Image (cartoon, rainbow, N blue to C red; front, side, top):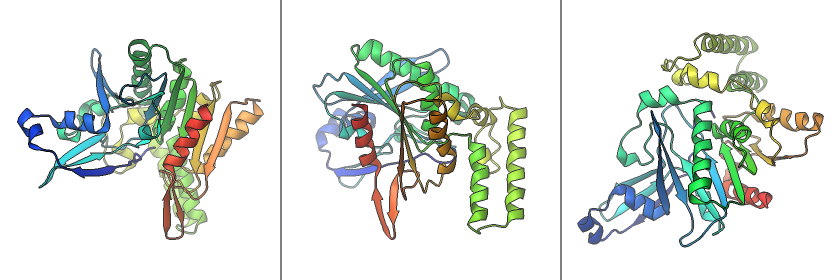
Length: 339
């Protein structure tokens, strides 16, 4: 969504013997080997698309799962490695859903523009990130990646499953209107309406909870509307203002995501799996109830609408002091649904 990307990290410590040091194995090679991903680069005129493909060793998968991650004002890498006193610490900042798939599936992820997938390769190129970062560019990256995989790597594909979370839940529906190879679509933790509507909705929810007065709520809403009007007047600007959390993104980025996601969803005829959490702190669930109503109004039958009660943006369920991570269970159910 707008302010933070969902991060799942795993930390694994184990010894690396002297053979690695003697062979001068790079951190990238160690990480790719550890998590069983292969790096692919698609060169473009002004950029290159970096994507990473996972499959079981020795397998010949006939299905592709592409994950479209969320984002944040400063994009994050996928992997990191840190040298410890004895060995290395391996870290990944993406869901481990690929471990839940069998040999019939390949799993792909795409790096943010201007952002190394490996933290050890240095910080993101923020100028390039702001120059290219938009809904249309992320759709272009994903469309190009799917076409590359299906034309060059796995030519006889049965299913192409795309699921996006947070900002990725805005990307996935528009992607499905462009790429006709996609057979199943997952939209997780997104919103039927644009970000700025959600900002206004959060203000009203705060007022209803008694957190702030009605007058302050309306003042904040008026300021949010004015801010979007400024974005609309200068919608191609690629310089972030950095005045607050909202404006750390560029006008170009905000404007590109201004079209309601519901517009794209209603154009799609392949099966769609919506997944939401009732306590989502980034994407308020309320606007999403428009989706099943509109599908019913138009007689569309390709929607599966799923809600995790008491789940937050990353599908962690809170029950009193207890927290339960529901992400993996949701992913398993999602893959079963595609069958």
